[in-house]
Length: 591
Image 1 (spheres, rainbow, N blue to C red):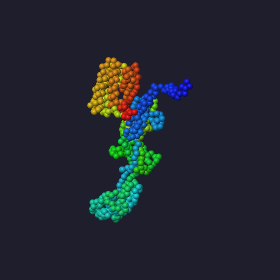
Image 2 (tube, helix red, strand yellow; image 1 turned 120 degrees about the horizontal axis):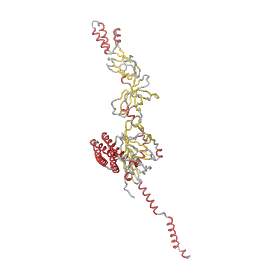
Image 3 (cartoon, rainbow, N blue to C red; image 1 turned 60 degrees about the vertical axis):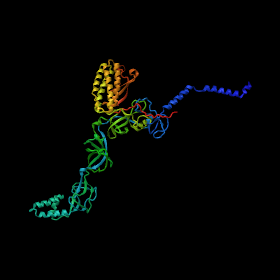
Image 4 (cartoon, rainbow, N blue to C red; image 1 turned 180 degrees about the vertical axis):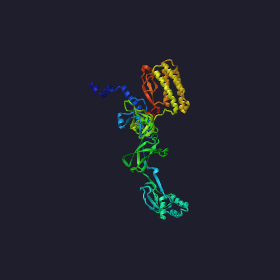
């Protein structure tokens, strides 16, 4: 036995056997290992990679951007509360705080909105005067030798030596000697001097003195400030030459530029409050006296003029001013107004982010809005937002950039539009059809089969009143298909003998009416797309409602409030195709 233990091969075999037993005891179970490998592989397979500069690029493995060559970054998941709206982007509380995101509730534009304009003080063109030479001659003396000098009416400005005037004086003196015999000659000599703007007093002085005046004074016909001197001593001037320009500064104009979007809120008689950069701390008031009927093609603005008295001489031409005009336009009382900082500008149809109410995490819905006129630092909203909704007013670019980098929809990556442009007359006609549809819906919610059949007949009449000739191209083709679906469903509803069948036909009708609403829009401020997940044996069904309160047409009184609002349609709002929010480029490389 001792010899067996001393054999090295036997020792080696015993050690190997002991190692196998110990390894078998401590090894992990193979199913768990397989599951871990599966989960890890699945996690890697689900991970997408994008380019920070080209977020439309989506690859299922790391690498370089095929457009710019930059390293790809992982696409972060932004869904933490299960929001099904592809236009909604969710953020963490820390991200909201870090981006300094602020929100504001939307309200109507208050009455008396203020339009802010900028401009200059200018001279009143009616107070400008040119002092001209009434007769030819040479400037002998100047009594006003610089611009900016204040002159009064009747003040001497210059003296002119004029041989022609001396000859005319001599003719007067000669004619005066024989005026009793030749009164016509005497009168003609006087009229010649009057044509050269000599006054009766000057003519009488020449006659009384019996001497020719070699120099004749030029006097100011208007008081004011000399803005231009066009002569010097020794200059020869002819009849009509402009010697001085004089302007009265006791009355001035305030000329401001109003852009096209401002003009609907301005009218003659509006009060203007303005401040001048050169007179801090003082506010002046004037009234709009003129609005230029022409738009400047270079600046796309019209000149707005107000008149102001400047008896104290504080205001000076060319001073820059900033004015506000109180607008009492009726449209300003009804439309919604949002600050400029809330907009991502893309033209008349721009982007805002609306805070999703009652969300577990901060969530913001990208919304396209149609802009109206600009009032001060705000824009009026024609469509896209409802009163009381909360919009991002600070940090809107940070929200959009984060959504873009995560691969969600953003300003630069908007989905395709479902909405089609149609005439207003057509939209009014299908709104009448929608009202008839709502009657059917309400009657089914009340379990009233007879009334729902009558409502279906009324809806058929409304459908026949829709003029398909108003549409062209794709809109016409799409309406023709919808019209057939709607007419068929209404016929089935009219002929239905029980509520169960009516509700099935109503579901088909609702599909077409919802498509009609999304494609063409309705002339209603707001309608709702509702959903009941339990309808038709938990298959679920949608319907259109004019009220936010759920009134279920598929169950009636038995489950009247079963359902939820899935989407809100605002008047004039663009409806997007949001089934595929991401564009993925599959990699051909395999492991």
